[in-house]
Length: 381
Image 1 (cartoon, rainbow, N blue to C red):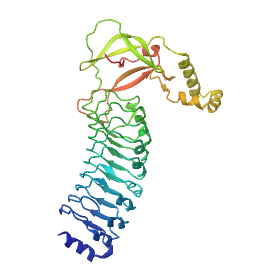
Image 2: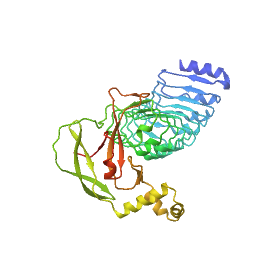
Image 3: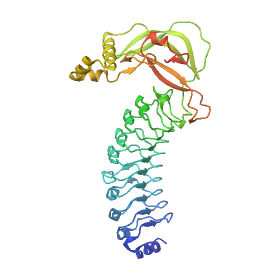
Image 4: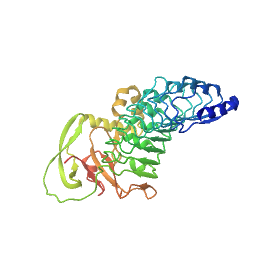
């Protein structure tokens, strides 16, 4: 059968554009492919191919290659010669690595499907696929998303469901065109604050992870679909408590400072989340940093000119944040709080999701006392 199809294709001459050998139990790619230099589409899915033939490198006009559901163990090096390739399907193989240099020639690739393989890592070279728009690596064993992936500025859709991803790199903020991000069934404990810079994100699936609350500004994302079931989200649920004092630790410049508890409580299953207030623990460095950041916010000309001469100061204050109550900047002294926000009515959300816990940071006891009734301090019980 395969031979007859090849003969028919060859009879069509060098201008043959499409070849399909799906489910033919092929164990070896036909070397006669080199006689079809004008080939645009090659479909070899659902076969028994363990490796690609060297002759494939002659298919420099190929734009679509489907090798899904075969026996490949690596993303083959020969693919780097397919300089016109735009769509590459390698799902359902045994792929556990990328051959060295394979990404170098795939500068026109816009779609990469590596679902259902055995990848535990992605090479740094993945960042060379600058034209990539759609990337799907579901059902693998990835633990880390390399920062180089975040340099793929044309990405619109990224799927990483059913992996072992622990965290999302802060560099994800550079994916400004990202509209769809699927991260379901991983081991992610928190999303970085920079996640909220994804202003074009419309679909987010973070179900089945270890997230308790979402980063500050999360509510400003214009999501149309949001799924988060199966996470240990903080719940707004009153419990009976007695009036007593306890200790809450506030991290300041590497030190732990004691503060007192109030007696407002929340519970999440068997865990209590207590509302904390901060005592007098400002340091001179913090006060100085706040003054500098505040003056820069107000565009003080003296400080704006001086800051250019002191790059070390700029580096120190660059991680500064703004108080969710007063809007003033702060550096290292703050209260971690949670605010419960209703999902947008225009957003399709997980079933039974009524309130989304969003982290907010408050700079002082005074601001904490001015918070809304829907804001609570957070600490371990």
